[in-house]
Length: 392
Ligand SMILES: NC(=O)c1ccc[n+]([C@@H]2O[C@H](COP(=O)([O-])OP(=O)(O)OC[C@H]3O[C@@H](n4cnc5c(N)ncnc54)[C@H](O)[C@@H]3O)[C@@H](O)[C@H]2O)c1
Ligand SMILES: O=P(O)(O)OC[C@H](O)CO
Image (cartoon, rainbow, N blue to C red; front, side):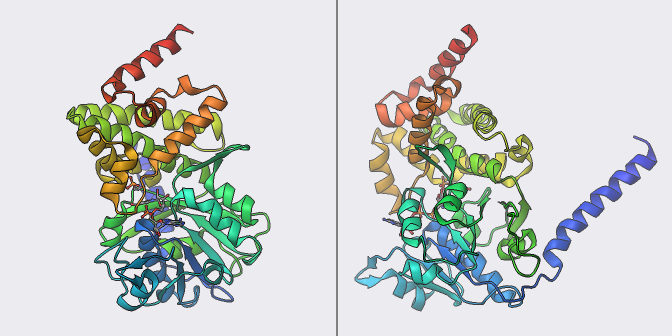
């Protein structure tokens, strides 16, 4: 490369990186500071609520200080969890030993939590989402905007749908997504990680200072220990986030069988291929580069397959021969391994549209988890179905 080209390239990189840091350093203001609410208070729900509450306190020109977090109420040793969170400032069940900011207020009333919010951050296991949006319908600001931190799909009469699109459709508000290589316990301890936020600026955008845009979202989620890149590929980050949980189950099976790192790497290679194929086939608006450029892509696949709940549940299934349901109950203390639901929903969708043979790994995970197919058959299931494909 010629010296002049190298110089140009260096100055491009520098200006890009300055633009990146600019959006964190510059002052972003709102005519009326936005009220933020978080729906969900599990392991990730509480962690993201902590992140958001820290930023709301630090940016009074942009956000109201108080952040309400909706909590599915339950009693711990006879005391309501909301009461414990609001006095001890810790979520002792779902995120123990992590101090939460005092401007984060636990609220057991969903409507009260969200009715005045300008930005609603959804963060519940996806099996509970439908019931919550149903309750919220007609009780939130029509001008509100949302971000979904959930990982999964909605599969129904309308086919396979992104959860952000489901929220938009149910509540009539624009919804983006947040997804990345983010094991909640590490983010909660403020160990550095990256994430991706994706948001489409809607047609009815009300203007800078009056509405949510990429700079506002960066201010809401970016922390010194949690680096945010904001893009517009909502589909790409959502597909990667949902499907890597299925791959993590397969990884857990081979790990639990004691097959070692080569097998785990093979699973991740095949899994990445199926994730990209799924995106291209069913969400053509998603971008392939999102999978390798963003935290929400390969990086999330790697971290989830190394230490997430899905890989832990599947490893234990392989070691003990117990069912997924039983292991989830025994080792997750009320938390959820979302890959178990996602693999069932993806199977239903692929069966309905006649594409099961195009995704042998996803199908193998479903058959092992729900139909008693031995895990040892995993390599041949991938290979056999692949050969079938070759015959065509
Ligand atoms: N935990 C992580 O490391 C992590 C990281 C990134 C993304 N995610 C995703 O974030 C989403 C939320 O996960 P999480 O880790 O916060 O949840 P979790 O797995 O910790 O689930 C427990 C939560 O579900 C709630 N709950 C139980 N029964 C309920 C009911 N009937 N109705 C409503 N809520 C009920 C509990 O009160 C608790 O808040 C998931 O889609 C997950 O895949 C998780
Ligand atoms: O613990 P898991 O398996 O739900 O995965 C956690 C996150 O999705 C990792 O980013």
